Image (cartoon, rainbow over all chains, first blue to last red; front, side):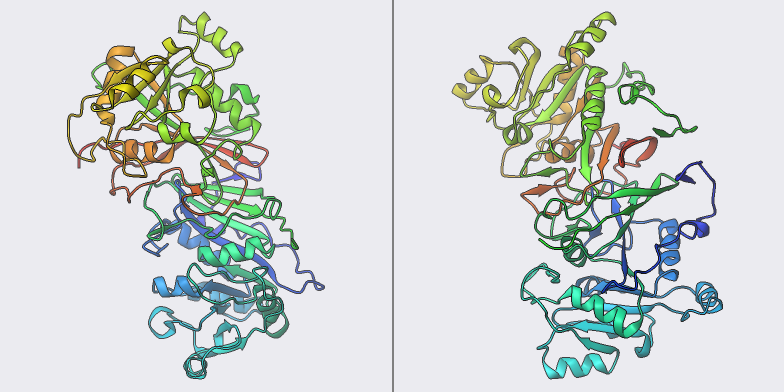
Length: 272
Length: 272
């Protein structure tokens, strides 16, 4: 059921998020249009034991796939991939629909990592190496790079600014990936105009703190999970976000079986 | 704007939460009807630097007062009182409305503490000592008890079960207050049929984990705050809640200026 925009409308789950378009890509922008999709419990928990899979309902997973089908690429952070087995692909029926629209059948699967420590073989299900891209900073050991390159395309992202600005701040002590440059690489070299990001919380935090995320799709699951860090994480893990970095505006609201599907325009602000 | 229950209706902020009654108190129950009211950012942060005050909007504060006006008592945990100056009272206009209904003008202010370490004088604004009740476990040092008793009514809550069940688990190493017994004291000795709880996260967690909370009013503020424990807290801080303790059901949904006001029936389950 769509409650916003009005009027209230009953919809099939498959139709949700098909109805409101992403803004047209700005050809002058040095990055794609970036939408983050996350699920959280009522008490703000987005992962239990590192895993988000069990928090949302089947309806949430349908919407996740609808959003993927509308993106040129789907990106996650390395921590998310290390935490659980997952796929970034869309089901066959959506792949055929994309093909009919002249798109590549599957969105590009992208993994952002600061260390190259990625269990691609065991945890990422699906993409053939030509549809999988790993974004890494310079300085990864040769051997690790060779292992990645045997399973995926790799892009070494030069670091423009040696600061936290635009950097992928991992929860631990990993070095930084310059996200601003990484997004520019996606747009320039892979024609990615719409990028869907599916976490984790450290990647979300780095994007939002750097003014690099345009939208947030937030599923609010009717659950109270409890739990603390590092076992339980919120959708944003990192230092306090400086005030004024975002001004979230609710642009749509759907409800199914007590679960809320919220879409916010973030109106990001770059710079300090 | 009320989106649920349908139909969509425009309301004055002052009318929200006046329109749907609390269930009638069950005379056989050994506790009041318990509703928790919290505000959280989109990333699940309910307090920054221990303070919740700045997260919600003026509309949220209006709703908070409406809920207080409908309760026989308003309770907080000691940590919340230590973190910031606050009042649990309602404004004069609501106090007069209560009086016209035959209620006491102000709901009883209740502070639950496991140690008696409470800055009543500096941080709790408003209640005269006859309208302020402190719930404490046995074994508090005499001197501390005397200090509390000079500023408030005090009830020493005997511990029925020396387990975490029904216990107030503080974030630190404080001993336990038997919440089940504390609630029974409120009902039996102070005629509290409807209790509003305004946090903090440790008190919420203890109530929910023990199956002692009937409703959650959750304001979802359109903000992304970031921050980590202990600086930033979620609405529920403690171990993972055992599955099946609650089955939240969305019973109303209001929207004002991108802020969502959600009301959930929790359908609590007691016992293991």
